[in-house]
Length: 252
Image (tube, rainbow, N blue to C red; front, side, top):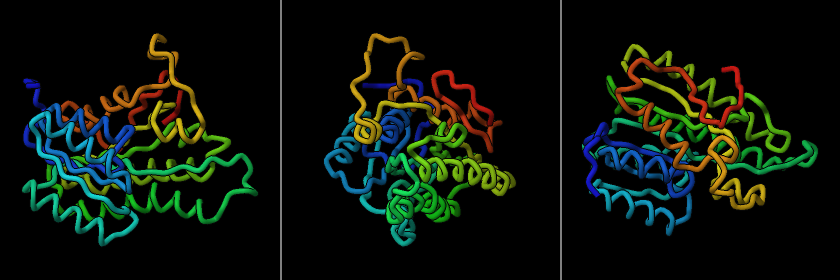
């Protein structure tokens, strides 16, 4: 299918956690608007190949990388290959993350706490560290945080803590990147119907006939916020968090 509104024509994008869920929806949407897209995923080869195929159907280049963003050498090698194959890197989207619900802090497993921090915030910093030297004036970084960073969550203590850290990281990096003309923002979804949340909380299928603000968001509805932040429409926005959350009143 041909698209005429190519706001991201020939832009090069790297997205972590993009084999499914929000990351996949963002990857496909940005490709529709003209971007070549590289995706990082952890282990689901089939989903990653499917996402790659959808991007290529849109006439854009797509490459996939399986690995752990908590490994800096993997991050460096991935970024270098993206720049080699696409010729540049214009947009970094940090979306990889995990969650392990637990309703009693006494039962939180140390291994899972460390895995959550490694995947959600430490890996984000490492991938950004690897990508930052290649970004230039007019480029941008978009991080995925969550409404839980502001509201908390009684079953996601460590996850919520990492999402709060992402907000602080976004604001601080925006200050550092401002003299270089690089924008740094974040998206904080509210409840979203993704494979991860359905698996984590045993959620049932949403009623598609409900109005948007009376149900969990779809991944595609969230992806639009990333598209906005990636385009020139957001040229004056940096250090900010966009809140596609269905009407939750959140300070920040």
